[in-house]
Length: 132
Image (cartoon, rainbow, N blue to C red; front, side, top):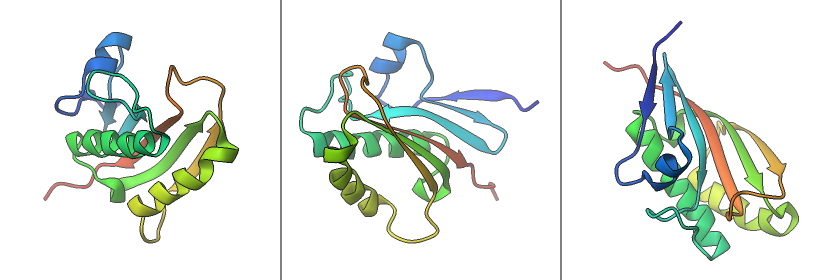
């Protein structure tokens, strides 16, 4: 079984330490990223919904980079939404800014009733690129 390495982005540890989990785990050539939310460095949520979604993607980008990956390496996405019907247009606009061309990762969106004070969460699995 491949070794598991905990991955953390720079300057982004408040929620991980508060709740006792890793930002991501690298196992072999896969990076399993924990759900990223639109939190500020102190762990508080961005109050504006679009800003919260954009911050979640920025936090995801930082975690991917810490694991040697980028958005292009993502193969699987799961998103969680507290009010999918009213939020989906905003989420799709941000998604389209991030994933601009095919092939797109597969994506599962789930409506939930609680995200610990947040309204959007994104978790992914990425393939770590081979190092030359």
